[in-house]
Each structure stands twice: as C-alpha cells, then as structure tokens.
Image (cartoon, rainbow, N blue to C red; front, side, top):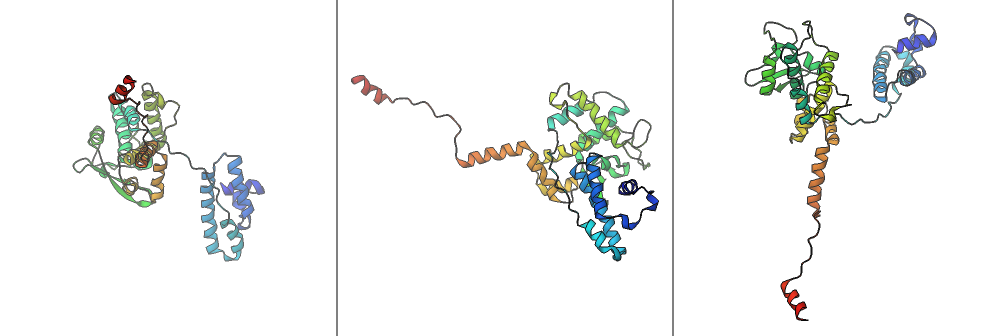
Length: 296
C-alpha cells in the first residue's frame, strides 16, 4: 500500500521507486491518506506504521549510508487509540443462539458443532477453522489441540455436548482435511462462519429482543467465553493460557468490561463499608409510655 501510494504521488511506476523516495514526510502523508481517504482508524493506522517501521529497520541494518533517513521513519510516533468496550454475549444469549439450530441435516449439525466449539474453547475463528480430525480426542479426556499465533499450540478440554455435536460430523481419521467444511466439501471460510452466526442470531432474536441490531462476529463468542470464565471465578492467568494470550494485559481488559463483576464488587464494598440501605423501622411507643400517657 505504501509503494502504490508513493508511485501515485511521484507519478512513477512502482518498479521505478528508489530508496530515497522512502522518507518520513512521505510516510506521514501515507498515514494521513489511509485515515482521511480510506477511513482507517487509529488502531489500523498504528498497524500500518508498525509494518513500515519493520521495513525501515531492515533497511537500516543493510544500508547504513541512509541511517538518518530511516531513523526519522522509526521515530514517527503511534497515535493514541480509543479503547473500545469488548462486545460479548451473556450465557443465556449464547444458549438461545445455539438452541435456535433446531433443524436436522449436515448443515445444521455443522452449525451447532461450530458454535458450540467456538464458545467452549474460546478459539479464534482461524484456529477453529484449521482444526483437523487428528487434532481431536473425543474420548476421555476429551480435548482438542489448537494451533495459535506464533506457532504456539495449546490444548483445550471439550464439553460432552461439544463432543456429541462433533461426532455428528463426517469425521474421517485417515483424512487431513479440516472438520468444518462448506456444502462443497471445502474448508469453511471466515465469511462463511460469520454468515452462519448471523443467520442463527437473527432467528434467536425473535425470542431474545436484545440480540437485535447487534453486530456479532465469531470473535464475539471468544469474548463471551472469556467473560463466562471470569464470572465463574476462574483466575485471570488461567484464562490467559486458555485463550492463548501472549500477555495477561490482554486478558485483563475483560475485567473492565464486565458489568456483573463490577456490580458484585460494588455490593461487596457496600457491605464492607457497614452502610445499611434498609429504610429505618417505624417508631412504636412502649406499653409503659402508653400507660403513662393514659394516666394524664
């Protein structure tokens, strides 16, 4: 994207760009372009800048004569991004979405197995769609091996309900194909998984009005799994390993998001403070006072 932008800006083909064209002012102009023209947010802008910095760092190691030029690129600061509230579903909502799959047939079996698998394991959609039969162990202890980011594998346990749904799929132990496939037998795509979830959310919204007008993606089920584990009292470090986060700071954001945990914390604080929210009882005169008043 940077090379195409520079070529358009300089009026030359990409093949005729030179190292002297890759300067800090040109990179800043590119960053403004992706924000103003392409509508990219601060997070995307910072990701683009990180890639350009890696390129500049590579050039610096192999072309010391332009060290100042590359150093100016490396000094471009990132932009502060507004932290978004993590979107998640409560367990009742997830259950309603899964229970909306009431039809029979290969497609329904796949949809139910996919949604249960995503919620059970908290897997990224790319990890779930890459699972093969050899990664599954449907006998005790029921588990799956997920291939995460950076070549890091992790093992997640499976519910009995998830195993039962997976057994309904045409699993071939001798095959190396992914377990979640489309109607043509090819590997299910991210867009296909998003379509499946959206279709069943729309159906569940008929009985759960709060699901209407919500933009839900398969990644929301990963967030929902994390929040459910947090509400169940699971330690944050365990959730980090369960989800495959590199840093516990990534996992800790679920604490700031979940209203139920904040509500429980507030109730505990109220009780610890010794404050009584109950209205004071009505004053009632004693029998001795009433006798004294009658004698007057």
